[in-house]
Amino acid sequence: MTRTIITAALTGVLATRDQCPAIPYTPREIGEEAARAAHEGAAIVHIHARTPEGGPDWSVETFAQIYAEVRARSDVIINFSTGAVGIPAEQRIAHIKELKPEIAALNMGSMNYAIYSERRKEFIHDHVFANPFKDISFFLKTMNDANIRPELECFDTGHIGNTRPLIHQGILNPPYQFSLIMGVLGGIPASTRHLVDQVDTLPPQSHWQDLEEGRMAKSNGELVAKAARMCKELGTEVASPADARKQLGLEPEPRPAPAMNRTN
Image 1 (tube, helix red, strand yellow):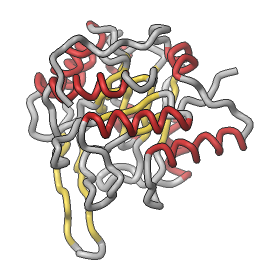
Image 2 (image 1 turned 90 degrees about the horizontal axis):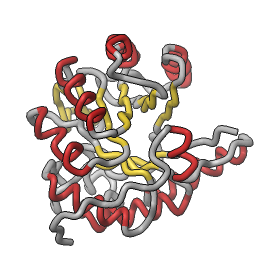
Image 3 (image 1 turned 90 degrees about the vertical axis):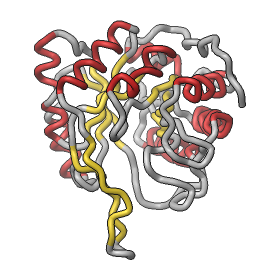
């Protein structure tokens, strides 16, 4: 029986400790958070690198430190982000090319990406998240060359449709792994009706996942534990990292952290 794969997105891309005090920043904190998520049942951890102050960090060295900290604590599948605003495509993919995680995020379309405070009646973040097909194709070919599975991040139904030419070209191959990210201002609203519509538009041989929003959690482990309980209540089994590797067609053994100079 196919088991349910739980992914924990450990940091997010924009939220800081001002919005959620539990968000990890340093490689060690991210490694510890990954271990908590894995302990509660997560098979995959999705990771954005941060500076010690909480800003985005795209250096290969920081991602290498994160890789080592995560792998030192568990055999969970590592999924590194490639999403960024105002960063050249070569820099957005450099850590993927160099470190070769098992999975890398592939953002499937452009959008307005914003966070709006209703209390303050102002935008806290307001960006154009640009992902033209030339960049998507470049990222995908780089992942293919490094034997890295793409996680197809879709913030709207049109982003799902953007996979069609890539499948036709033969550079995007099954099984497809979709992350249906809902509720971001500029993307599809978070509702059951919209989720059903998105799932109905997925190509055959697709895996998909969705993320919850609402109550503030104290850790990713808390969210993963809730997801695992829900799976059991619905009569499904939670996939271990080994199960997930088999179902997604990954190598059976976890990829070790690359041998690079690291500091904590």
